[in-house]
Length: 444
Image (cartoon, rainbow, N blue to C red; front, side, top):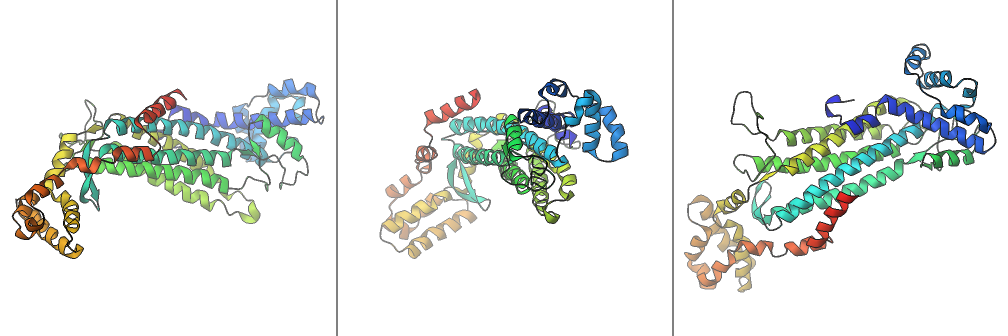
């Protein structure tokens, strides 16, 4: 596990203590099901339910057997006595291990779902606060036309809502158990036993299985985490770009006493966002490994096992950490509306070129002719110190068609934000509904 990125709740999910507790939970659920079916005496259940894992003994047995399940069973048997003969009755190792792994993945998913909700709350707050705050929209890294910082946040809200839906679907796919024996034929068990045991564990029985649950399920879980991590990288990359000294429209939090460089005291680096970006690359690598785990010899070997012991805990741990880190960034995000306005005005009105183009076309000029008239003045504005509007007013060919009194109203920044409310509503969200989402997410 990656200790640096471990938060307590997620670390507990992937601890050995929790893993073996889940193994024992599965074993006990199967014993209860056997008792209900009249196969083992009911009076043995109280003693079986008192079973515990002696970790020291388990380690000693493992050194001899080199098999964690037999070591586990030996350590459990020592705490139970004669009744232990009913534990693991008819089961193969993967009946226990895969079903218990599903329980761990469900727990991990619940934590990640809460992480996403926490981030969505912050993003919604920012979207509402900066709904009408104009900023430069950029394409290819170059000034295009104005947008609003609130719209940028709304875009991220929509994406994280999709990610939450993806995570719910991944949880549904992985919320299955498998109690079907050595090759999935129920030769030493029965489908009814599986159904009863899985119901006790709040899992659905896999409709069909080999000795293991098929790894496309686990691949869907990890690839879902990789998509979420990639969204975070996209957001973090944007914050990094906005924090560049030449831009400085937004900035991740920088706390008192924090240092950005050992050599340069002035530095305020976007190191949290850079951390989020780096972690996303790691999770995408785990996604590839999870897909490599799908193909196994005759649909059952253990080549996936060693990889899963790393990728499933680590993908969950680092995404949990990354979500919390980016939520921290967004909570403390410094936004500079004045600098946004200054940056819009850097090109001295060039952002209105399309409005002028369309106005000329509306005067019955051909698109080619109108484009040439606008572009030649735009190129002069790029090279010289005069504003785009000044150059247009001085162009006889332009003012012949568009006099100054018609040109000037075209240079209005509010024009670009007139549909902000419509876009928020297209998301199904009026301002009151956005506020309701905040309250609902806080209360869930």
